[in-house]
Length: 420
Ligand code: HEM
Image (cartoon, rainbow, N blue to C red; front, side):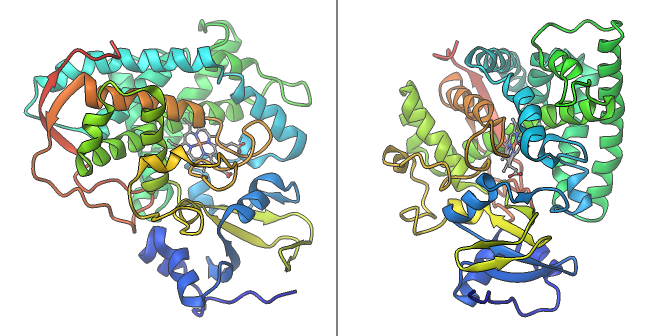
């Protein structure tokens, strides 16, 4: 068995907070190795990168997500009892619940609802001196996904839910006040979602057949029992919060259009596949989910290394999407690279790898891509706007990150969109 190089400090938790997205890449360079051991939260963790490691993380059933995430992150994202914490047949059964919502018709319905919101918001933005795009988009997607899920919100509720979902995402990668705020607001969301599930079950609240809230309230796990209302609420929040988070990728699309204005011209009226290449490059290029953790269930050998039962592993998702052996000139924004991409299930992993139904790959990936494609049309062909001077830098220490100014626009004007 080959030995794995070790990161020197006794514990690197503070270095992780200081280096953020670049923590693993920096140590790979220092140690001249794709694999290394470091210590986080006083425990050894083996850090990996690349398609073979992604195959291990997503294809191999000798590993689990249970016990692989700090509790402060877990409770703001997927949480106990969620699909991500399940393995094997139990995981596939719960995953099918999510995937049943992802038919082409279902996805198109969500895109149409979001398009209605763009149509409604652009004239409102046009009437304002300036608009901060990121929070405006969080509100837009929160309302759209709740509507799609069978939970139409009024203005006050929409503001409240947006605040809660946004705080959970913002707090997930931090410790201290940002995390605590997320925990408090999560508690409120969960209470609301639990009430919704119980009201649907006792018939006091109507829910359209086939809507997400109806599917979650009536889903039966492998044991043929309805989900505990707390778990159904957790899954509902996972769907609503994560779709609200598409706002972050759409803000990065606006940043890409700002930094590469030639793409604004190219995308106006572009064919669907060209828009898709732009969206894929935004998902590859900009940092979102930095890495993912796993625990080894039984002793295993991988690429000449031994991982003992209980070992903690971490896969660098952002590092895989920027690996110079896989991506030519990875630090350049070049959507054309997707003309020749081999469509491997393991080399492009912003939302995980392998098969959506079988593995822990993100069930919302198709929704994300569809919403981003439609957003690219709205940003280029549905409106014009200016970008006043502001700090658009991205702080790579903050996870998840966003441009400092959160992308301020002004002089918004509605134009007739081909999307219309
Ligand atoms: C906004 C951009 C998004 C990003 C960057 C993202 C990222 C990811 C990643 C990396 C994973 C894999 C985690 C793992 O390996 O354990 C994942 C899983 C998951 N995502 Fe997403 N996601 C996004 C949007 C969505 C959306 C729209 C949904 C709505 C359905 C969603 C729901 C989930 C769920 C439920 C899982 C757990 C799946 C499982 O364990 O089988 N995500 N996501």
